[in-house]
Image (tube, rainbow, N blue to C red; front, side, top):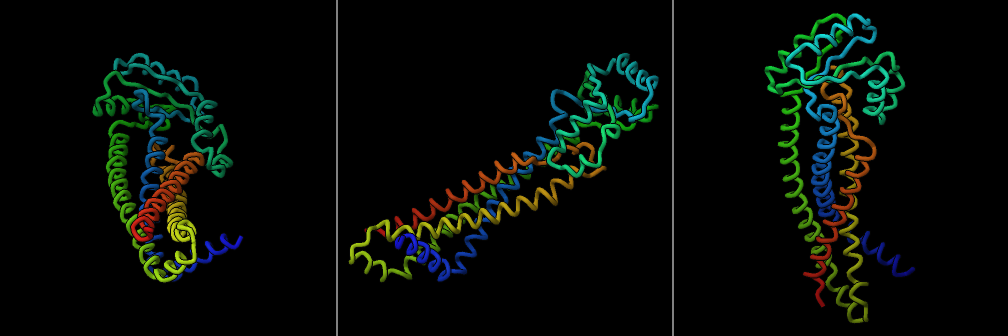
Length: 297
C-alpha cells in the first residue's frame, strides 16, 4: 500500500513540477487523436450515407404519401417501358419506414415525431447506362409527374462526396500521424526533464537498494496519464463533432442524399476505444524510450 501511494504521489508531483510541458503534451496528443478520430468518424458517416446507393442504384423516385393507384401505375408503366431502365424495385411505405427507423435508430427524437404515414414509398431505379448525363436525363422524365414527390439522383454528387471524404481523410490521417510522432517525442522530453530534475533523488534510491522498477514506474505512469488525458480531449472532440457537425448534415432537409450521414453508437464506441488504445500505445512508447535512455543502470 505504501508503494502504491508512493507511485501516485511521485507521479502527481512530477506532473506538477513540469506542468507546462505536461499541458503541451496533453494538448498535442489530444489534437492528433482528435484528427484521427475525425477521420474515422467521417469515413463511417460517408459509408452510412452512401449505403443505399450501392449495388448500382443511381436514382430514387419518391412518391407522395397519398399518391393514388392511377398515379402509381403511371410511374410503373413508364419504368417498364423506358429502354433506359435496367431494373427497378418498389419500396412500400412499411419498408420505407423500416429503413427510416434503421437510419435514425440513434436519434429517437426524430423517430418520435415521425409516423409511418409521413414516410413516402419510393422506387429504386437502376439505369442501363450509368453515365451521369444519361442518368440525369432519365431522372428528369419523372420529375413533376402526378404523384411524384421528388427525384433524387446520386451519380456525381455521391462520387464527389466520397472523393472529398477520401482527400480530407488522407490529410487528417497524415496530420494525425505526424502529430502522434510529435506527441511521442514530447512525452519522452517531458519525462527526460522530470528524470533530470530528480537525478540526485534517483541516485540516493539506488544506493539504498530501490529496484529499477520502483524508480521507473512513477515516470512511466506519468507518461500514461498524459496519454489518457489526451485521449479524453479527443473523445470530447469526437462527441462534439458527431453532435454538432455530422448529425447536422444528416438532419438537413436540403441534403436528401446525405439522409443517412450519421455515426451510430456502436461505431462511436469503436472509434473511441481505438483512440484510447493509440493513446496508451504512444504513452508506452514514449515512456519506455525515456526511461531506457535516462535511467540506465
